[in-house]
Image (cartoon, rainbow, N blue to C red; front, side, top):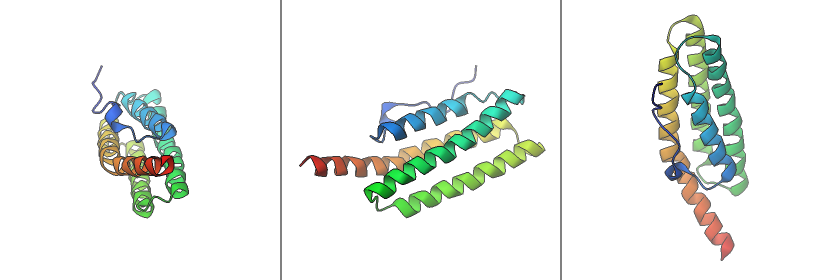
Length: 134
């Protein structure tokens, strides 16, 4: 079995249990794509895309509710990824690219996004918790 390009580690946690669980679920969905081009892989690819949209909505609601100052930029990145994912779905469906390319793109994006943008959110959440506790 192919090793995942990224696996969940505690260092990726943003500090919100819902967001962290969603990140883990998204990584698990991506890792399940095997590039065999059978119906299960296509279903899993579509499930990953749909789950990403669900996750983005929940994460954006959290950022909006807490007044996260980088919310507009973060939401813009989510919209860009959504457009890229839909483009991959079309290309895979037309045979213009394969599931391996989709999977590599997703893993790279998730890794980079979580390790940069979402960890900024994590720092903000920690300051909010510290401020509330005082």
